[in-house]
Image 1 (cartoon, rainbow, N blue to C red):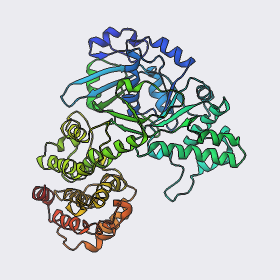
Image 2 (image 1 turned 90 degrees about the vertical axis):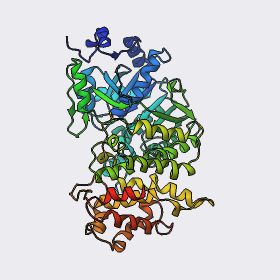
Image 3 (image 1 turned 120 degrees about the horizontal axis):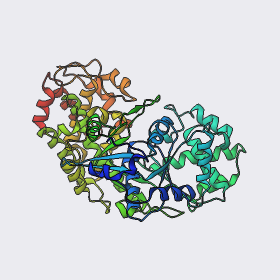
Image 4 (image 1 turned 120 degrees about the vertical axis):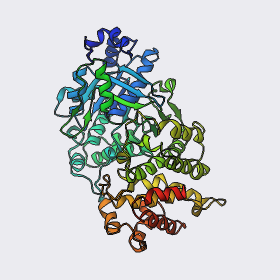
Length: 537
């Protein structure tokens, strides 16, 4: 008999258990009733990481009897995720954990008990959202909407038209994402200035500040236009009423993979087909993710907090969150990923995990992490930097079951290198016992990136680099460079001296000439990339 992912299909939990699926032990109907009556946690952004991480954390808390209310999923960008995936499956999902050891955990997640579109034209959903925000029980409003979800401006720094229209129309007529979120917070203000934590869990630095900047901009515009009470801005600015904690999140959750779908179909589960929405979102009834995960949150919750610290989440001070963030982004994970992305594309790899079978690439990231990064990491105390790198190098990146590609990670590299490598360079310059010119592997990554921008792999074949907002501009400088060229200074110096890209002028810190030297060697001809790695790594 086929298994069906629905309330009806989960009445026979034994059938799921016999196929190796963990199912909930709590009374989901009772949890749903309590959530509808006294909601405590609503999350904006109904994507894969939310279903694999936050929903799974609450699932564990419910199974342990620590929490009594479930999650409410709210989607403000792509309503079809809710309409075509959540609701047809009664908000249930399958979480597949892909372990480096080769074992797989499968669980049906039931903690999401309500799903809503943040759509003013769907009056039932929108009215329900208002009711949730007016509930005294609401403790946390969390977000995984990507960094650009908080932006109110375009690349030129101009307020985008939907936001400008919302500034002029007021909270009752908001249609932009952050406008609608701000309008919901206004409902909470009207209900008696009730306290709440607005928690960005997006993978970007100082994420709480980004959320605060967006919400306070709306509050300020509405107050100045006379569209809401002056006290609303005071409420948003009062951290004893509304907090915007910083957080650091880390869990690799690639898009649902065909090999995982095939495995689930082998368990005789029906209706597993993914949906590609009209906004080009790829969503399936299951999510696949790595086992390793981290969530560190500033402990600033004016209405009490969910007991996430009982399931591995770390509540701590803001400065500690900042140190953990810098440890991950500037040293222990993200720089290693970028190095593998650049050289993986050049050497024709389709999977990041496969690259770790190449001793040169493995040694490259080990040297970047342990030798060049670790000496300038400030230990945050709550996580050990060396152990973090150990896990990244030995378990996370080599995990053969994680279908993550160099092409995905190479996206927007120009926006990443300044943080992922530039901060380490600055730290070297700030130390009396170190100097940036001692660095050898980080410049090799920069040279590899220049070679990558040519769109020619190590076999001499053309490829299309991943999307990047500066790609066209950068290729104006390097586009005419050919394999075998030796005189590259005039073409690459405008890039290497650009402190907006690297965080520093690479020539001023003694690295520009070394990057050029490496780059010329990478250009020598087919096979030059592998030869250069062999020579220097």
